[in-house]
Every structure is written in structure tokens, then in C-alpha cells.
Image 1 (tube, helix red, strand yellow):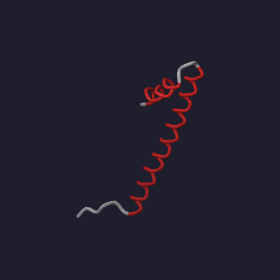
Image 2: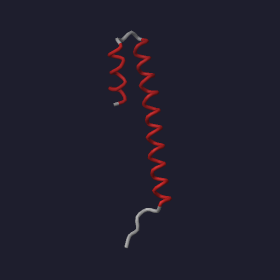
Image 3: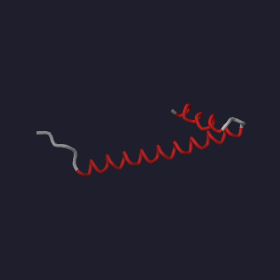
Image 4: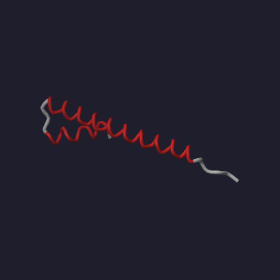
Length: 58
């Protein structure tokens, strides 16, 4: 009979998932802000600057 993962393995798995999600969220915010400010600096409108990071990172 096969046993499932131990509680320690489940804790490690969920900690890893949470860490990756937090790091991905931070990276997404920093990337979006950087691209938005760069595009605004070069004269694009605010709505263009808001959409461009989505097209690049998406």
C-alpha cells in the first residue's frame, strides 16, 4: 500500500509554493513599475504606459 507524503514533506511543499508566489509577485510589481516609468519618461500617454508592461511581461 502506497503512503502519501509525510507532514514534513507537505510543509516543505507549501512553504516552497508560498515563497515562489511571493517572489513572483514582488518581481511582477517591480518590473511593471520600472517599465511604466520608463515608457512615461519617453513621452507615451498614461494608458499606453499602463498597457505596455502587460504586453511585455504577459
